[in-house]
Length: 124
Length: 109
Image (cartoon, rainbow over all chains, first blue to last red; front, side, top):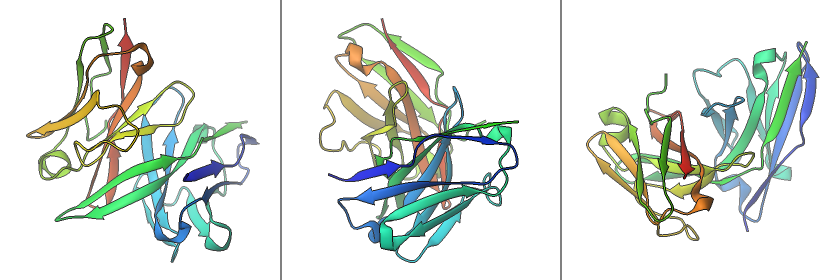
C-alpha cells in the first residue's frame, strides 16, 4: 500500500533552521507530485506548494513563496520542507500528501494519500 | 478569508443525512468537477473522501456523496454514524493554485 512517512516532531527556537522530510514507498515516487500542507493550531488546511520528484519542478503558493523551500531527493524517495530562519508563527502541523493531477479539459488536482504529519513548535 | 466558503459547523443525529456546502467562484468550483473533500478526525491526517466532485475512492463508504450546483459543491453524508464526527475540508485547484475551504466541524448528536 502507498505510504508517506514523515519525520518526527521538532521543537526549535526562533531564528533556527529546520528541514523536515516525507518518504514515499510502494509506488513510483518520481511519477507523482508531492504537496506540503500547513495546519496551524485549531485552523484549517493551507496549501504551501508542490514538487515533482522526477525533475524537481516546484510550484509555491504565493503565501509561502520565499518563506520555505521545497526539495526532493529521488534517489531515496524523499521530499523535504525547509526553513532558513524559523518564526514563532511557523508553529503548526505540516503534512505531505501525494498529488493526483488529472487533465481532462481542465486540470484537476487532489491529494490521495497523506503522511501522518510533523508537528513543528517554535518558541523564543 | 478563503476563496472557498464552508459553514463552520453542522450537526445531525445518528441515521440522519447532512450536507456540507462549499461555495466559490465559477473558476474554482463552477466550471468543472474540481472539488475534492477530506475528512479529518482530531489529531489525525486528512483522508480523501470525494474527488472530481463526486467520485469516491476505493474503501470510502457509499454513505458519502458529492455534488455541485452552480458555484457550490456539496458533501452529503447519509445514515449518519458516530464515527463520522470529524472536520471536513473542501479543496479546489485553479490557475495552478490549490485552495482549501475553512473546514466544517460535523457533530453527531
